Length: 157
Image 1 (cartoon, rainbow, N blue to C red):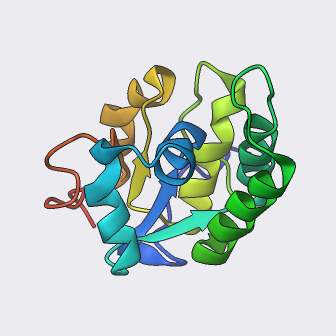
Image 2 (cartoon, rainbow, N blue to C red):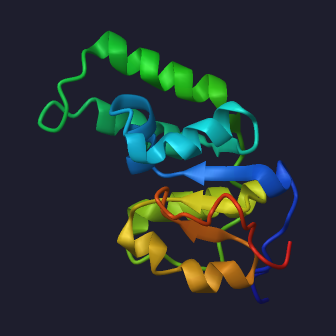
Image 3 (tube, one colour):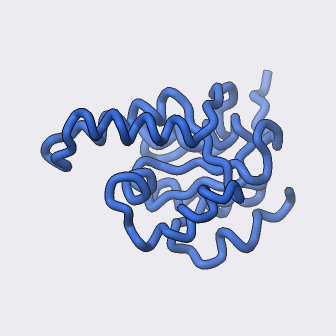
């Protein structure tokens, strides 16, 4: 029996967005000015972020790396709780029809498909390499700096 690889547009729908860990760090830890348009879109509800246990775990693990960031444990908890309160939890029930070269990034694709997300915002090269394939099925994989990601939803939606 062949696996179903159809991307379903359900769940939170057209404004659902998956943010990878580097984008979360830019938003929540570094307050990077380059992601301010994204922050505004999230704060106004134009985009609805989605998350799952696997993406939460990666965010928490990266925040706790003392060799990368010296984030106090209480601040780690505050950042993770703030993120979880702002994003809708989604059960990952579908595997994406695209396979990321880095298996640790596959969770973002699977979350996007399971949530019926229109956007996956990332700076990760392995994920960005799948953008053309994903766009054909209605998922835009873009950088937060991309000037057009907010103004032009993926075609076919």
